[in-house]
Image (tube, helix red, strand yellow):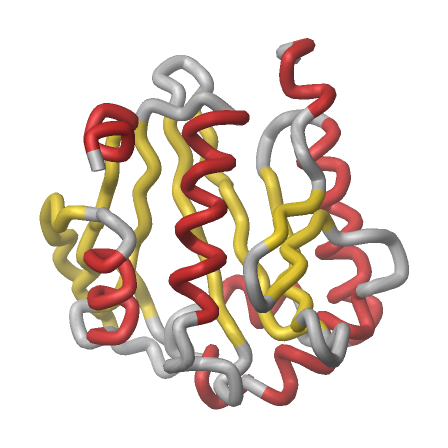
Length: 192
């Protein structure tokens, strides 16, 4: 445990969102968001969909994320629209390796809010959180080779393509997908 992480921000504001740590009893909101976006998430978030397939499992998933935050194992935020106060997405730092330190970043946004620049706002501010508050040296993300929107977003936010992992992800259908790794280092972030 690192004492300096006891006082990090639990809320990050962007022009159009309040990005904040989830709270207990918000599992139903996450479940509803997932159901509304199931067809968009089914190929990219297989494990996540299984872990949140019922309202009860979604609540349990969020409580595990809250515990993960307290144990400094991961940092999971909900994205809330400023105008409607509706949950519109999620972003999380996970697979944290404090010996480097580095973390993987995973995220999604409601399909109705996609393509409007909201996710790039959130990702930019979350990178600041990751490098300044968590003091990461490297933040990376994985995406399917055919997820061009995610690849554009990663590049827009300063990530560089680092390589490919062949047959690294299995869709619900059983089909294996190649995955691209994008990363950004503290030095690159501070230089930009």
